[in-house]
Image (cartoon, rainbow over all chains, first blue to last red; front, side, top):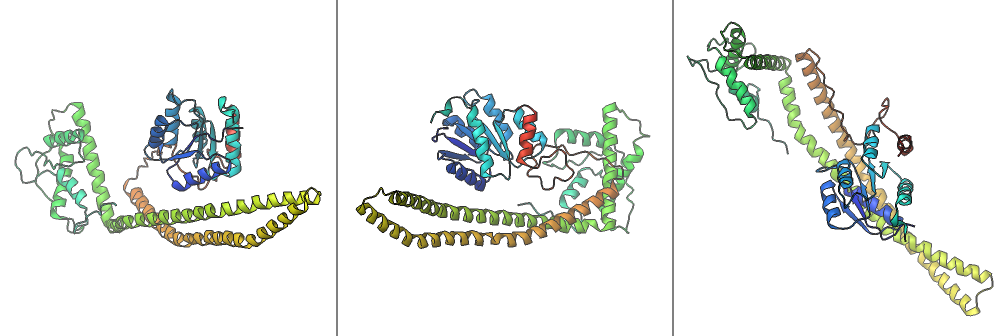
Length: 133
Length: 303
């Protein structure tokens, strides 16, 4: 069982989407959720506080999701973080680029709560220490 | 907000006029005219150098041909003619041409040609007026789109708020009824004392009295959610208008392009990775249509 106190960072430029993801996470028992509106804001938070999981959109101003992902993977203190992409970008090119850049999962919008649950579960399975409740 | 382009009587925008002025060769100047350098924040050093090199070679031939029929202002006409003169003169002039200056020249005169063509055609077809009107309509379109974004965001907020209120009510009904049901199970299993049974009956009665109030509160939120969908009507109308506008503008511009630049020089716009949601995936093999396809693709790549 994943630790319900896991700290999530939800990154999306639309506040509505951030709210929806937050609510879905709450449904799954995760109440420790913070938000950021683009990659730059996200990195500021990631570098100043300790997070356990990042959920991010792709298409955002200032710094897009792919660049955020690549930056996370290139930063020693952050590269271990699971990064789940939730995005409207549906070209094969996108999916491949995300996977090659080290995305932990890829969800395409519009999505269902069930899908989010499933993908989170998959990532949790692969996570080493966080499995302790 | 976009700055409204200012058009003078001849129909040219101020910007266009300034551009023409900056490449104008003064017809009245007798000897070796220098390019009128109009400090244009848009010009960079390369462009300036280009203009300078061309002006150094331009022959001063003041023979403005009046073209009444098209209604061009005299200045404008003089400008075009002087540029045209430059075109004619360049080959015969003993140039101290190093290869770079020659090709700069060629590019410049080519652009001059094309610009003249475009200008003339637009005038003849009356497109300049049309485009002017459409260009003026664009700030309006931006406003409309902002309106749509605002309306939909408000609606989303309303709905999310309503669900935030209704959810705890539902959860409470769920939990309380489950607890009572469990105790009733015990009752039927003869596990409760008489006092416990009495208490259970009272609590159950209390719960049943509560339920209508709770369901009414939830219904209220459902109604709020329903009403929040009213944005659809308003935004739908506005979207229609903007679509029409965009279609008009597109077809007009397309036509202008087609008619003025006959050599089809099409560059594929670089296909990036930020395209937004796919509206119509018909006939697009490069796009996936469902989460299942996403998963399949990732699996096939070994992720």
